Length: 219
Image 1 (tube, helix red, strand yellow):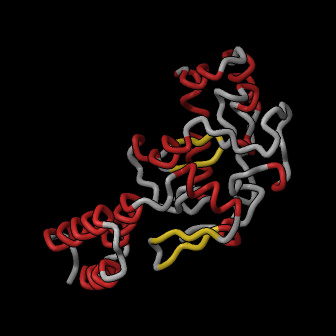
Image 2 (image 1 turned 120 degrees about the vertical axis):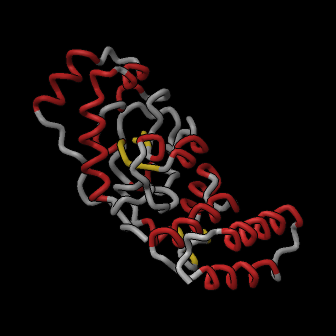
């Protein structure tokens, strides 16, 4: 299910700083320059290991296609461009969490301009400064439950409690851990008995149909 906290950020070496000092003009869009491709690759390679290849927010398994993993700026680079390359501001997330979180500012003091290094300064469950599983519970490796205000904020802003998120995790479990489809099927059947919202119920029933039709599952 992944680690509770990233212990050490990526260490920027001399080559990294040379690239940054040469090409970063202080505008957050500079992040997209091809001159930083090597830097991004090194950050991804390092953090995949540190994060046990899980999204820092939803703990979904990160796949290896470049479209299926993002370098997340915890404090959005568009809101604080000066933090664009700060290592404690970089973590790996799935594209869904990154996109949903968008430019929401996770700072307790919205006007703060210096980088905070304390948990108390953040509204979000910070990958480096908080212990994830003290703030958020993951039930059956799938469903998300908050344990407090930080969990509430993170779940809401990253959309962690959607059925689409649950569906992604179910498919990952079946693919990577080779769970029998009956195990997940029975779990979802139990869930449908407790769901009153017809929209959510339809999503669950759709997941069950997907599972029935998957021929790659080991029985």
